[in-house]
Length: 259
Image (tube, rainbow, N blue to C red; front, side):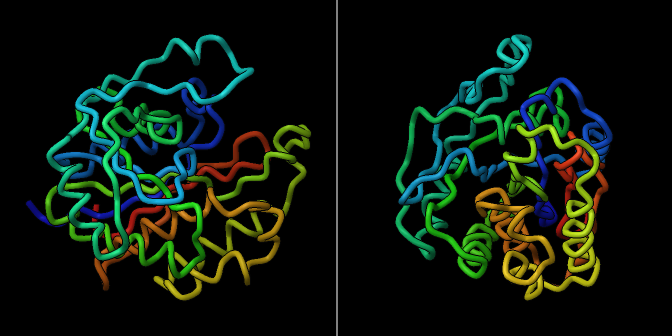
């Protein structure tokens, strides 16, 4: 099959599973437009480890790794199968980046299953996760994506799941739609994507306006750089506008390559 693009998706709050807003239907349309992958590899900030881990479960559980939300969220299951063979291939592929260990029991955290509810609502595409290294910077996150890139030729859809903006203090504070910094920061990133400017993307948390407020901690931004690093050089990049959730969560997705 032709090489697959890589994706970044903003998974927002867990309530995205119940309230799709603008981003949910956009992800569903994207899933319908993409060639069907052999498996989806998800890198999420909700599985961070000092050393790399790869989930090998044949039937990964749906992990409800959050508290205090609508009880309906805890009843949602995403019963996609895993893909142990491609997960083992991933262990080999990552050797160029660093040693990786198998995890036979890892389920799908909400950074994986919540956006996948919209991208592949039938849960009929195999899914497995690769952990996000604890110690990263922009260059290292990009290199991590480059190490995963050969899997795109094996039919693996590399999906970085994070958030274009992510300030839990603003979220919990209920500031609402008065947070102009969200659009200013998001527009800066969108301009870098439209220009295909990887160097600018890697410098985002140093150079973008309001970066420290948009991402007080960087873990929800690194998956964007992982997905970008996994892209085939010279291919187009495009933004899928997901709107703003809760007045402060920019919900854009980015496609790195043809879709």
